[in-house]
Length: 138
Ligand code: HEC
Image (cartoon, rainbow, N blue to C red; front, side):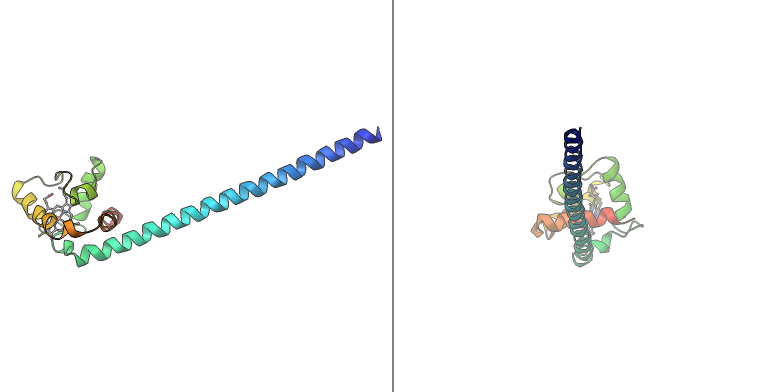
C-alpha cells in the first residue's frame, strides 16, 4: 500500500515536471516567434520608410500623388488596380510586366521613359521598398 502511494506520488511528480518542461519549451517557442515577428515588422517599417524617401528623391511624386491624378495615376489608383488584378509593381518597374493601370500608349510611353532611364539603375531592394511604400499609402 505504502509502496503504491509512493509510486503514484513519484509518477505524479514526474508528470508535473514534464508539464513544467513542456510549458518552458512552449514559452521559449512563443518568445522566439514573437521576436521573429518583431524583426519582420521592423524590416517592413524600414522598407516603407526607404520607399517613401526614394519616391520623393527619384521624382515619382512629380507625376504620382497619393489621391489625385497629376500626370500619372494616383498611388491609390495604382495599388487598387494592382490589388484587384494581383499585379506585381516590382515586376512592372523592372520592365518585366506590362502596364495595367493606364494602357493608353502615350501615357505608357511617359512612364516607360522613366523605367528606361533611372529606374533601371535601382536595386531590387529599392524597388521592393517603393512598392511597399505605395501599398502603405491609405
Ligand atoms: C514624368 C511623369 C512620371 C514620373 C516621374 C513617374 N511616373 Fe509612373 N507613371 C506615369 C504615367 C503617365 C503612368 C501611366 C501609364 C502606365 O500606367 O504605365 C505611370 C504609371 C505608373 C505605374 C502603374 C503602371 C501600370 O501598371 O499601369 C507605376 C507602378 C508607376 N508609374 C510607378 C512610378 C514610380 C515608382 C516612379 C518613380 C521611380 C514613377 N512612376 C515616376 C508617369 C510618371
